Image (cartoon, helix red, strand yellow):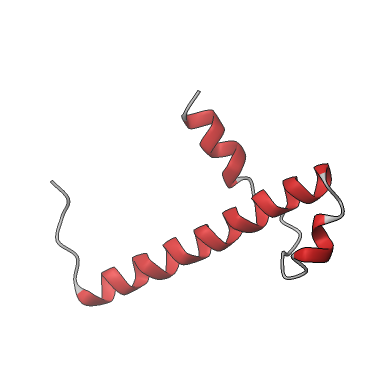
Length: 62
């Protein structure tokens, strides 16, 4: 079982999770744009990513 979180701890964890998801989405977008440069025209909000979450996920699930 997971430990119960206080409201403040839960809020902090949600902030961390949202940042992780945003970084991962940018990472996936960066990879896709490298393969298909024209995608940048349709998703200009994608930021260049320097995180390695995607690599970490592939390493975990190998």
